[in-house]
Image 1 (cartoon, rainbow, N blue to C red):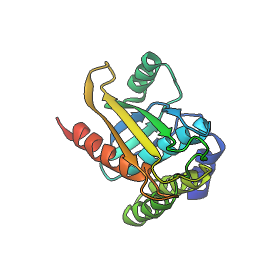
Image 2: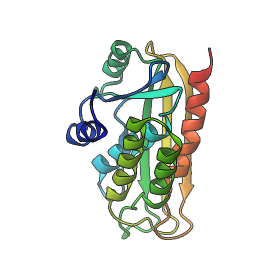
Image 3: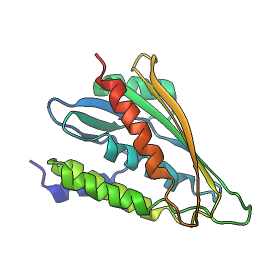
Image 4: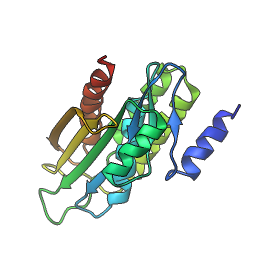
Length: 200
């Protein structure tokens, strides 16, 4: 049985490969690679932050996540079928500056705090490691959100056959420099997603 450090090594050393966090009675949600349009051009970091944030929130006693590698929606659905997922999640994030001269926002503070809270509440060692990774990823998104910058998060939850189970698009505007806009957006979306997959 792999140790906690071995699981963490796998998550950090091979982020582009499919990773599963689940228990025997978990409902699996497959996370397709997100899309990002970031004002500072740091799309790859934002994609990772979205993936890790959703992975952290959607991991628990009755939920598990599988990280997909296929970027085409049709291939992601096929990958989800083969992974045995009940649903596949497609997400997109967009950052817009209020001031064209400002830098890309750092999506960190609140996500880091809440990720550690999730880690403290869960009994799963793998879920704790995922929460810690989500916090680190958030810190790695460089720059600083400026007052009045806007972050939008869209999501679409589908069955492996393509039927839409839930969808949404929400946005938040920063009231101050350095405000974490992603965490409340992901948290709200994750609640709706968890409710959707809980339906028979």
